[in-house]
Length: 261
Image (cartoon, rainbow, N blue to C red):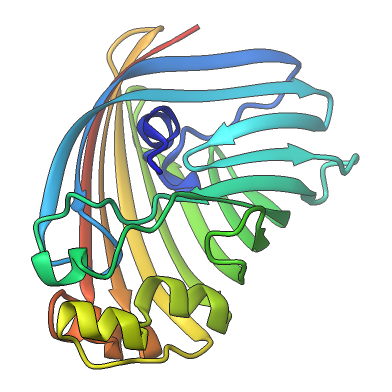
């Protein structure tokens, strides 16, 4: 099952989204983007897609609802010391029309919607900001039926009146159900694909770094470029889906032009 609209709107990691501004009311950015990314987790084949861009934040004092990249978050903690609350995010799965015929024979993996909680601490450094956060998530459906956790550090710096830079690093841990869904090869899958049967184990899935550069064209218009690199590790990297048919090195490039209301 494909979720095209969700996939189109949620193309950027949370750390690459524009830094949330304090204050009440709705802030909305709409635009067009292009993304160059692996076809699926562990793929060595890449795809380019033109996609819509959507980012929003609605705040009331310290409370807010924010769409940040692939995550929708609700901050329920007053006082401003930390941000914490429920969140939902998604994994885009693996389509049935990928280029790799061997992996295609393993079957399609539906897009998964994950729900959980987050806690994040922001440190203001002049006009710059440092944030440290942790997320704990579980599958809301029956795609992988697993759990995952992510630790992230991000830094946003205002270079000039028009230019701003963001850098981020993160690590993702996943349980055995999650890992077996995306990296395992069952006996039936091995018979269909010719790959060696493989049972993926719980552990760190990936370590990621990224950088975003934003240019303010006018009060309303801005342009964004982002590059990201992800290294699959441990059981994910050892999977024949990755080690034989794909690559543990995963890159992504995104370019977006947006209008802010």
